[in-house]
Length: 159
Image 1 (cartoon, rainbow, N blue to C red):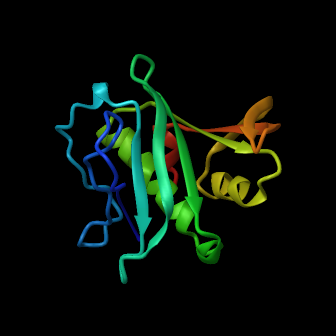
Image 2: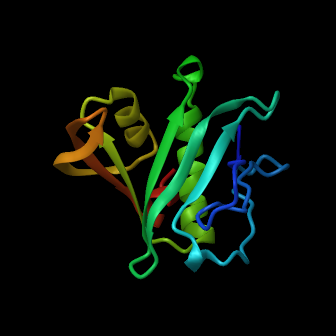
């Protein structure tokens, strides 16, 4: 699995970096460390099957607060590809990228309380559940409670 920049019209929040597993299998993210990151509000990536190039889903870092060095991390996987660890692998890659390349100190994962699959992803990657946020997410014209999870750089050192 690799994460590559989404291909769409250029925008100020479009990421020009590519996330991928190293050729030596090190699992590290490789990207353009010289990017003008302070101008970007988001880094959005497609999750791509390394074997056949098919799109498995998407992930990204959004709502970046450069002053306090934190961001929101999102992920989604096509339903026919769910349950294979794709979201967990992408989340870990993206978190490493956020910490090591962008210099973030906190990454938040906000998950609707009823989204059991996404809650499992947050737990699997070692994110700390911090609490329930009432009426936090607006989906399909309805407000939903959501759990706040966070990752900090030392969380990835414990893998």
